[in-house]
Length: 119
Picture (cartoon, rainbow, N blue to C red):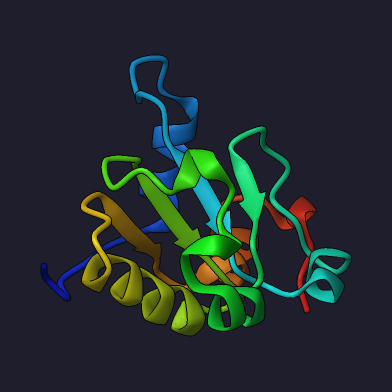
Protein backbone atom coordinates (compact mmCIF):
# COMPACT_ATOMS: atom_id res chain seq x y z
CA UNK A 1 0.00 0.00 0.00
CA UNK A 2 1.05 3.58 -0.46
CA UNK A 3 0.23 6.88 1.11
CA UNK A 4 0.90 8.77 -2.12
CA UNK A 5 -1.98 10.45 -3.89
CA UNK A 6 -2.12 12.90 -6.69
CA UNK A 7 -3.66 16.35 -6.66
CA UNK A 8 -5.73 17.43 -9.61
CA UNK A 9 -6.31 21.10 -10.42
CA UNK A 10 -9.78 22.52 -10.96
CA UNK A 11 -8.97 23.11 -14.63
CA UNK A 12 -7.85 19.48 -14.99
CA UNK A 13 -11.10 18.34 -13.36
CA UNK A 14 -13.16 20.51 -15.68
CA UNK A 15 -11.32 19.16 -18.74
CA UNK A 16 -11.88 15.62 -17.47
CA UNK A 17 -15.60 16.32 -16.95
CA UNK A 18 -15.96 17.70 -20.48
CA UNK A 19 -13.88 15.04 -22.26
CA UNK A 20 -15.85 12.37 -24.05
CA UNK A 21 -12.97 9.94 -23.64
CA UNK A 22 -12.29 10.93 -20.01
CA UNK A 23 -13.48 7.54 -18.87
CA UNK A 24 -15.65 6.72 -15.91
CA UNK A 25 -14.73 8.41 -12.65
CA UNK A 26 -16.45 9.58 -9.49
CA UNK A 27 -16.20 12.90 -7.69
CA UNK A 28 -16.37 12.10 -3.99
CA UNK A 29 -17.56 15.20 -2.10
CA UNK A 30 -16.62 14.75 1.57
CA UNK A 31 -18.29 17.94 2.81
CA UNK A 32 -21.16 17.97 5.28
CA UNK A 33 -24.75 18.30 4.07
CA UNK A 34 -25.09 21.91 5.25
CA UNK A 35 -22.12 22.83 3.04
CA UNK A 36 -23.79 21.34 -0.01
CA UNK A 37 -26.63 23.84 0.42
CA UNK A 38 -24.13 26.69 0.10
CA UNK A 39 -22.05 25.44 -2.82
CA UNK A 40 -22.48 22.38 -5.00
CA UNK A 41 -21.01 20.95 -8.13
CA UNK A 42 -23.95 19.65 -10.12
CA UNK A 43 -22.77 16.60 -12.02
CA UNK A 44 -24.04 13.02 -12.17
CA UNK A 45 -20.59 11.79 -11.09
CA UNK A 46 -20.73 13.55 -7.70
CA UNK A 47 -21.34 11.32 -4.67
CA UNK A 48 -21.53 12.87 -1.20
CA UNK A 49 -20.08 10.91 1.71
CA UNK A 50 -19.24 13.36 4.52
CA UNK A 51 -15.83 12.96 6.11
CA UNK A 52 -17.53 12.59 9.50
CA UNK A 53 -19.35 9.51 8.16
CA UNK A 54 -16.10 8.07 6.76
CA UNK A 55 -14.43 8.63 10.16
CA UNK A 56 -17.25 6.73 11.84
CA UNK A 57 -17.90 3.88 9.39
CA UNK A 58 -14.67 3.64 7.35
CA UNK A 59 -15.18 1.41 4.26
CA UNK A 60 -18.84 0.89 5.13
CA UNK A 61 -19.51 4.62 4.60
CA UNK A 62 -18.99 4.23 0.86
CA UNK A 63 -21.62 3.06 -1.60
CA UNK A 64 -20.78 -0.36 -3.04
CA UNK A 65 -19.62 1.08 -6.38
CA UNK A 66 -16.91 3.13 -4.64
CA UNK A 67 -15.47 0.22 -2.67
CA UNK A 68 -13.59 -1.16 -5.66
CA UNK A 69 -9.84 -0.49 -5.32
CA UNK A 70 -9.65 0.23 -9.08
CA UNK A 71 -12.40 2.89 -9.11
CA UNK A 72 -11.09 6.27 -10.27
CA UNK A 73 -12.06 8.83 -7.62
CA UNK A 74 -11.46 12.57 -7.31
CA UNK A 75 -12.02 13.62 -3.68
CA UNK A 76 -13.37 17.14 -3.13
CA UNK A 77 -14.05 19.34 -0.10
CA UNK A 78 -14.21 23.09 0.61
CA UNK A 79 -10.51 24.08 0.28
CA UNK A 80 -8.67 20.78 -0.27
CA UNK A 81 -7.58 19.95 3.29
CA UNK A 82 -10.20 17.28 4.08
CA UNK A 83 -10.02 15.85 0.57
CA UNK A 84 -6.24 15.41 0.90
CA UNK A 85 -6.73 13.59 4.22
CA UNK A 86 -9.43 11.33 2.81
CA UNK A 87 -7.44 10.64 -0.37
CA UNK A 88 -4.39 9.67 1.69
CA UNK A 89 -6.51 7.42 3.93
CA UNK A 90 -8.06 5.78 0.86
CA UNK A 91 -4.66 5.07 -0.69
CA UNK A 92 -3.43 3.61 2.60
CA UNK A 93 -6.51 1.36 2.64
CA UNK A 94 -6.25 -0.17 -0.80
CA UNK A 95 -7.69 2.28 -3.31
CA UNK A 96 -5.24 2.73 -6.17
CA UNK A 97 -6.62 5.53 -8.33
CA UNK A 98 -7.45 8.44 -6.03
CA UNK A 99 -6.72 12.14 -6.38
CA UNK A 100 -7.59 15.20 -4.33
CA UNK A 101 -9.04 18.38 -5.85
CA UNK A 102 -6.52 21.12 -5.10
CA UNK A 103 -8.27 24.15 -3.64
CA UNK A 104 -11.60 22.33 -3.40
CA UNK A 105 -14.94 23.70 -4.47
CA UNK A 106 -13.82 27.19 -3.42
CA UNK A 107 -11.14 27.17 -6.14
CA UNK A 108 -13.60 25.65 -8.61
CA UNK A 109 -16.07 28.50 -7.96
CA UNK A 110 -13.35 31.16 -8.27
CA UNK A 111 -11.56 29.77 -11.33
CA UNK A 112 -14.16 27.80 -13.30
CA UNK A 113 -17.80 28.44 -12.41
CA UNK A 114 -19.03 30.99 -9.86
CA UNK A 115 -22.53 29.50 -10.21
CA UNK A 116 -21.56 26.59 -7.91
CA UNK A 117 -21.61 29.06 -5.01
CA UNK A 118 -19.14 30.19 -2.37
CA UNK A 119 -18.98 30.26 1.41
